[in-house]
Length: 361
Ligand SMILES: NC(=O)c1ccc[n+]([C@@H]2O[C@H](COP(=O)([O-])OP(=O)(O)OC[C@H]3O[C@@H](n4cnc5c(N)ncnc54)[C@H](O)[C@@H]3O)[C@@H](O)[C@H]2O)c1
Ligand SMILES: [Zn+2]
Image 1 (tube, rainbow, N blue to C red):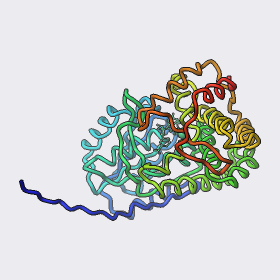
Image 2 (image 1 turned 90 degrees about the vertical axis):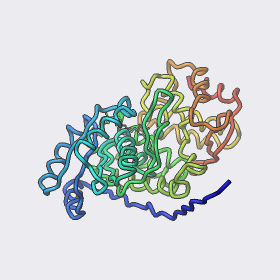
Image 3 (image 1 turned 45 degrees about the horizontal axis):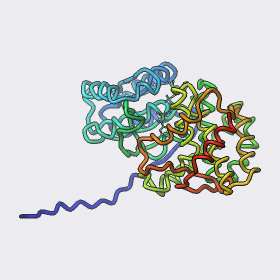
Image 4 (image 1 turned 90 degrees about the horizontal axis):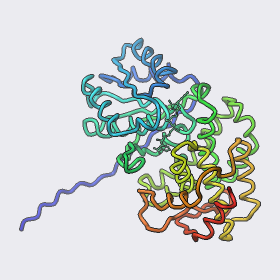
């Protein structure tokens, strides 16, 4: 027997900047012109195409850049391997090369899908992210998780692939629906609750202004929220341990989404999940009542429903067991010790989980 060792050692720097500002599109177009790219493909969805992508494409063309726009029907239903294939065919038809760039312009669905396309097209070409939902700005655009859904579960096929740069243009938030805007607020609250008590206090104090979509205030809060998430992904890019802290509120939240057949929005489901998981911590003696009440009060300010309506508790708990990415047989929760401090890998007895969810109906 012979043995040949193929030695591949890596020290990579995948660092990138997140730029936050207003009316950034002309600046991005001018910046791209200096890069000597052969082609640019904007990947977007049908809504964002109408609102922003067509105009952005024109801007790129006016700069003399060779650009194309590829879009797919808006919504999670499009985040599939089939759509990925269609986009890839379009890229090949347009003869994008390794010296080209992909621009992911849209919400989390676009970013996840376009990022995944970029990671495998010609074994990887660079991409820029321009998140257009609040959720994508504070969550999906940071940390390089890209994926598509399958009939077996969400986000099961994907890659860790970091963008070259993220541009957060808060001007695009004005066209976002109320539900989508509140989806983003739920993730910002989650960041505060698990890691930053001061951020929580500020969110509480400014929630009224945030709900009016005051651009200067929202920009400050987006920046704060992004900083919290970036610290987590810097520590544990591949979600081997610490990044799991971001699952707070999502164990129950995902189960509620699933059992409601996705009729309950992600933000609303996560809001209920955060309340349920705070109450579980309370029942375990980890968190005091006043702290979970503060979380509930803030969620109420965002007009989130705090009761679980018309869903079976039994089905919700069953759904927490069938999370496809779960490695242990027992459900592991992120529970709070106080606002700003969370503990991972906690187990919760069935009776406690049932009582907490039962109390919320
Ligand atoms: N990669 C990650 O780390 C990460 C983190 C969180 C969520 N995600 C993924 O993100 C997805 C959810 O993201 P989302 O909530 O942004 O959903 P989304 O991308 O489906 O966007 C929601 C809706 O808003 C529309 N929209 C987007 N920008 C708009 C704008 N500026 N004005 C008006 N309408 C606009 C979209 O067309 C869509 O209809 C899920 O697939 C989830 O798995 C990924
Ligand atoms: Zn979420």
